[in-house]
Image (cartoon, rainbow, N blue to C red; front, side):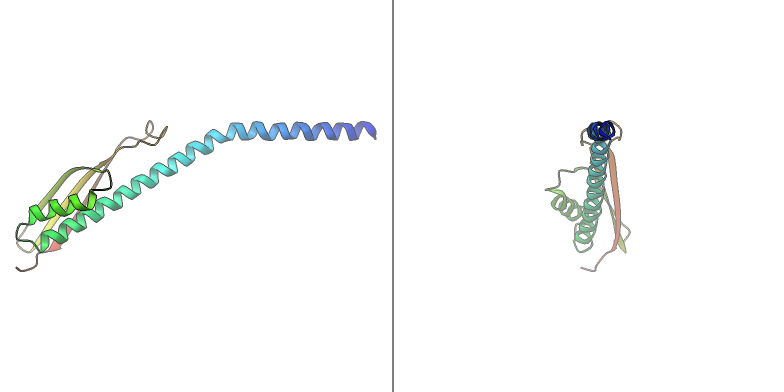
Length: 133
C-alpha cells in the first residue's frame, strides 16, 4: 500500500508539470488567434466607416448646388478621426441621382498578422436621388 500511495503522489506531481507544458505549447497558438480576431475586427470597423462616409457624402451632395465639393467635404468630416487614408472620392451625377464612391486603405498593423495578411482596400458606393434646389 505504501508503494502505491507514494507512486500516486509522484504521478500527481508529474501531471501538474504536464499541464504547464501543454499550456506553454498552446499559448502561442491562442495568442495568434486572438491577434487575428483583433485584425478582423479592425478591418470590419474600417469597412463600416467607409460605408458611412460614402452615405454622408451622397447625402451632402444630393442637397448641394456643388455636389462634388459637398461630397468631398462630408467624406473628409466623416473620416477625420478614424486614421483611414482616403484613396479617392468620386462623384457622378446623371441629372436624377448622384453616385458617390469612397475608397480607403487599411494597413494590417496588428503584430504577426500583418505578415500573413496584406493591406485591405475598402470601397463603398452610394447612389442617392438629387433633390430639387
